[in-house]
Image 1 (cartoon, chains in turn purple, blue):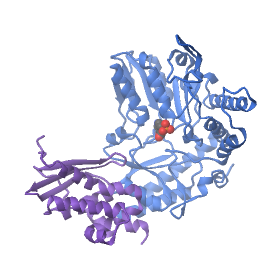
Image 2 (cartoon, chains in turn cyan, purple; image 1 turned 180 degrees about the vertical axis):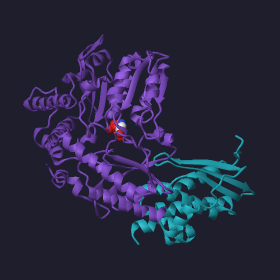
Image 3 (tube, helix red, strand yellow; image 1 turned 90 degrees about the vertical axis):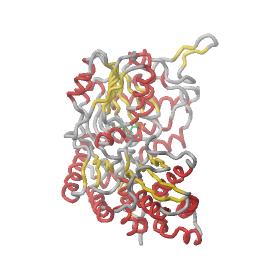
Image 4 (tube, protein in one colour; image 1 turned 30 degrees about the vertical axis):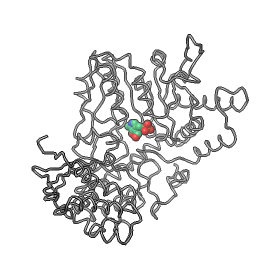
Amino acid sequence: MNKTDQLYQEVILDHNKNPRNFKELASPTHKAHGINPLCGDDYWISIQVENNTVQDIGFMGSGCAISKSSGSLMTSLIKGKSTQEALDLKNTFLELIMTDCTDECREKAGRLKVLEGVKQFPIRVKCATLVWRALEAALSQKDQAISTEN
Amino acid sequence: MKSVQKIRQDFPMLSTHMNGHPLAYLDNGATTQKPQSVIDAITHFYRDEYATIHRGVYELSQKATQACDDVRAKTAQFIHAPSIDEIIFVRGTTEAINLVSHCLGAYVQPGQDVIITGMEHHANFVPWQMLCIRNGANFKVIPITDTGELDMDAYAKALSENTAIVAFGHISNALGTINPVQEMTMLAKKAGALVLIDGAQAIAHAPVDVQAIGCDFYAFSAHKCYGPTGIGVLWGKKTLLEAMPPYQFGGDMIESVSINKTTFAPIPAKFESGTPAIAEIIGLGAAFDYITKLGFDFIQKQEHSLLIYAQEQFEACLPCIQVIGKAKHKASLVSFIMEGVHPHDIGTILDQEGIAVRAGHHCAQPVMTRFGIPATTRASMSFYNTQEEIDRLVNALEKAYRLLG
Ligand SMILES: Cc1ncc(COP(=O)(O)O)c(C=O)c1O
């Protein structure tokens, strides 16, 4: 497989064309905006947390295939997980695409492995991490749940 | 007639490879490649003739001073400025516009209008916006049409006695539109306004005659006309430059300094504080020589035929693409969006094919907003590009669409 094909694998192309959870929640408990001013990637993450569990999560906005498929995979994997598990997965993902990660990390990353090809395109790494950074920002507003009303 | 193949040999970068393919360099709007003669002029200066200017009584320094003065004269000739004292060396277009917007600070009164257009690069947008905020002036942005041309009716209507300054690009970097600068200047002068033209995208592609245009200031960067980075030119009318306060203070720009009083040197030195980019000035001179030798007749013919070819190929082979910017008078660039495919992904796929294009908002976010898009992909041509490179671009775009569209 050449580098381009490694980057744009079938799974990624599918998530780009049909992004899962591509929506904005009506009354999320947590919300954050992620933008990449350099290329114009721009997403809102909205999350519904109950009893420390991600009941529902959506992402909405526009951007490249890498950022969109990353958002689609992220939201699919995180729904139903505890907030701690969500943040752990975020760390695993960052390790996967920003370091010479271990096989153990790859194992933990599971389906996110399809994004590892991004590593070979340093300027695209930010595209893949954008939604995850937004997830982190949203969940870190622990005590001050943001409603759509303010 | 010089052959393009022969001309390409003047540019060492054009025979390099990128990602295993011969480099197809189609990002000339961002910056141009350098001919060997420019590289040699800089190397020769550093290796055999290097010294500072103005300060040394020794021969080397006098020669360096002379070399810079020669380039100043060459610059005046290149843009048909009436006096070499009106040529100010700056870091680039950005600094030139900041200089003018800063030094005209006292000229713009609260409640007056500063007018720009909706197709400006941020470098010719934000300095004026900030000036208006500082001075309590009105910041007016003239809209552009669906084809990416200036709405001339709106422009004419916006001008009035209340207009202090009008600033606009000669050629739009995001759309390729060649503005009717002469007519725009004439209308602005009639209203009594000062006119600054951002010539960043024009200087390499069309002969510039500041006197025929009739503007007050003209700015450009050397790196976009085959010269080095870090050097550019602000041309301004003598009377205005003389009336304006200095931009920065320091060495070279003073006449005399004492504890009680400092007086400033006459122009151009007044605006050139500190040790300048001497080697870069010399490189710029070599770039002018190169362009002059090639001639704008050849350059314009070549670049126009590349534009026509690219437009035909896009139309014939790429129905998935929508060109943004369809001005009647257009520079040799194609800015476009592809159905369902983000410019960033296109940029990566082209990169893997050895094709360098720009993907993004081109430092012209208001233009993107106007067309309701986040970004475009832009292929911008120079006389050294070939139809074969356009073919490669079209093939790679077809591939991108097959993959991601
Ligand atoms: C129209 C226009 N104006 C201004 C600039 C800024 O030029 P520089 O970055 O050389 O100062 C550019 C460069 O991209 C440009 O295209």
